[in-house]
Length: 113
Length: 113
Image (cartoon, each protein chain N blue to C red):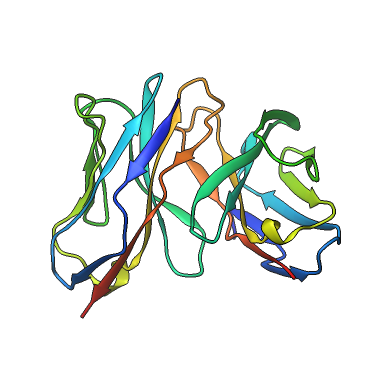
């Protein structure tokens, strides 16, 4: 069984469109994250939710909006997509008191044309 | 601020060669340190971790020792295999910082037969 899953795996879209990426974890973890990996492989945190509450909100354009309907899901909605949004987006989850290990999903490669 | 610096890649080695990937960090608190690995086309997997000074993390023949005096967490392996070809990320988490992972830039390793 997949621990942290993301859909879709690949997403190709036009500039100006609105798209969503979904993440689900079946590990019973309390905290979930979104990271962005750019074309040079550099990884940076974007958001984190703990039990549906936003706890980390890095300097990210407000076109990006995370939503957590329950603690097993963390979705990322992006409005008015730009070329610079092309990247791989990783979801991760963390068990509180679990030695700080985060479990990552397989990533969603977003390409904006 | 908190940051991680890794040696630039790519690192190219022959099979059975000795591997060292340097990692140093700057942290305002007491970090836990991690090495994550990303195989081609896949997400990140935790390779090893250390949570306090002088701890040694080890897994799959890889080792790294948490050196507070030199603020380093260098990754080593005595004999690399072709299957070790991947991108390796050093990262830290500060206690009480919502477990936000701060990554180094990643080091690509290519092992040739």
